[in-house]
Image 1 (tube, rainbow, N blue to C red):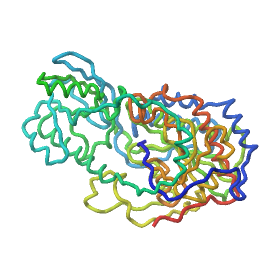
Image 2 (cartoon, one colour):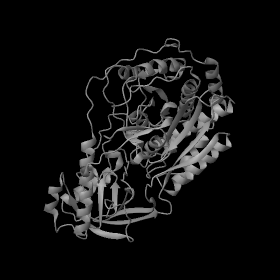
Image 3 (cartoon, one colour):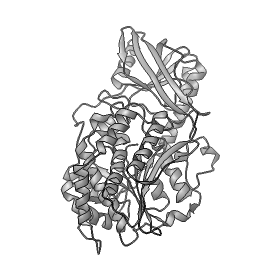
Length: 522
């Protein structure tokens, strides 16, 4: 999952009340949900299985397939119907890391903390070489390095200026910050698409140039502080795939190498990276199961989170925590032996980290889609970055989906929900959250959030919502890092989130009226 960018809207949600018009809340059911979630919780069992036992779950890797199989089996064991894996793709070969060792070997000896970028090749064994440095803001800047990088390990990028430590590493949302979320944001959205495309194309150009020049590997600095390495990669190797081993080095260690180069100390590194491609199955999978509704003609309520992760840690806050909570919601409702009017369906997505690919494929298959751009200038872009400017095509089940709820903002407790500019929905959600005020989950904002798995639903005119969560150390320490591990998650937060999500899902599944929608996007 990527850091959330709030987009501008022009509305303000007032403090929610118990009723919005005739919006009654099933308080008796809420009591049952609370008791089951608190007294019989299995959320940490699921969370530990995903993180400690299975580990990192890069899309199409053997670990993600193991997570798909286990979640399907667990949902079936709890008695859910139609538990299955739904394929999408082809995605491409999987990839996993077997060994990463990076050492400074001259002018001193020291182990360095590094991770390979996803889907980059490994080394042919340990390689030892002197360092060179490349700084480029455009492809034109590469010409000055021609003939200078052969046989070198190349540092790509400036030294990092690290935080001064004045900000706390972990925090919870204060009342003042929640009040600010309720206020309208009147500034226009600042699209980041062009910047991301420019970065992607420059990175590809650097990789090709280094390979042509005979460089041995490239190393870039971590984007994180606090002894954290961030290891992001693109997609499975294609014509645009990585040509050289590419590593991300802990920022403090990278800065030391830059200083050694600048003082003329002639530093050398030894790198040993062993990776494995998995091409037996080029498809990827979402885990899907449901509690059938009592009215076969009624709508469907969906909830979900993404099961995939990056490979540095064990994908704990991003997003085993959300997946464990979604699983727990289904366990709670099944354990209470209730029969909702609408079918309640869980989906645990894959490919989120590569651009919401699993959820987008599901929405396209079942509900609707907008064709991506056929502009030849965009043909080399990942599908997630191409413009969607074709006509909107709706499937028959578009009318059957009532609402989708997503959990993917770290592992903090739920504090409210983003209503995605849907004023009518905000009133309904406010009524549902009002009895959860003692849990701190009563904030409703009309602001939008994006870049997670509710977006494909919203793009085709379906109600899709993301919860507001306490940040804890998600942005400061765990987001896409080697510290995204079990210890960064607290049981009380996942139990609270399970209660809130189960309550909202239940209300949606039993509401008399259809859930309010925004107008279809033009």
